[in-house]
Amino acid sequence: QSVLTQPPSASGTPGQRVTISCSGSTSNIGGNPVSWYQQLPGTAPTLLIYSNSQRPSGVPDRISGSKSGTSASLAISGLQSEDEADYYCAAWDDSLKGVLFGGGTKLTVL
Amino acid sequence: EVQLVESGGDLVQSGGSLRLSCAASGLTFSARGMIWVRQAPGKGLEWVSYISPSGRTIYYEDSVKGRFTISRDNSKKSLFLQMNSLRAEDTAKYYCATVDGSSVNIMWFDSWGQGTLVTVSS
Image (cartoon, rainbow over all chains, first blue to last red; front, top):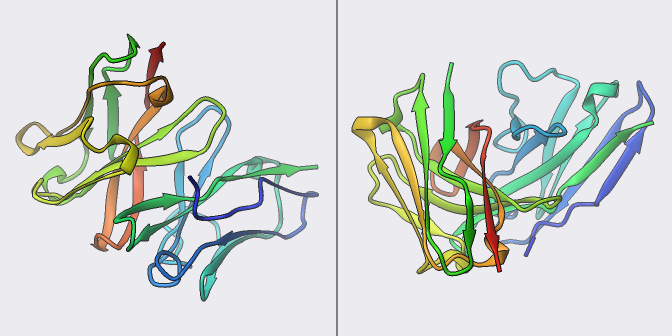
């Protein structure tokens, strides 16, 4: 039921910069802020980005978020092996009156 | 440090009921909205329900409306999810998480528990 669309996979080599997109509509991303979550294998999700581009304390500045119109992006620069994980975007949807998560993107570090 | 510990997951037959609990510590529980999120095996995250700090505002994902009930006991720093009429498609790990943000449409989830597994057999 993911109304927020993410690519199922992304990859990069150590040191590279990768971006993950999250596409929505005016009722969700277009009007409300986006957050991003990282889920390492076998663990619970953790907050990476909130309010489109804000980093919680402890998240390195090589991780950044942005939003334009009805799409958002997560960028990871200086890719490291420990970045290999699943990444999810999320936003409130005014029409559904609920939270939407993207389908998730599996990031592989080659 | 915020700690969230879920419990109550189990193997249950289709049509059965379960009550999940989430015990919180390290935060002013009564000041925080809370959510339940689930993840079916090998699948992505799916939001299930939201409850405001006072418990007066509640939202549900459409597929669980009328079957699941979210509640909280601020005096015991606990969150609950009563799950009735369970279906095979409810099989998932269920996470509780704390809500931050200024309003219901401006929220993010800053602390997560480790989850509890619900398996519904058909």
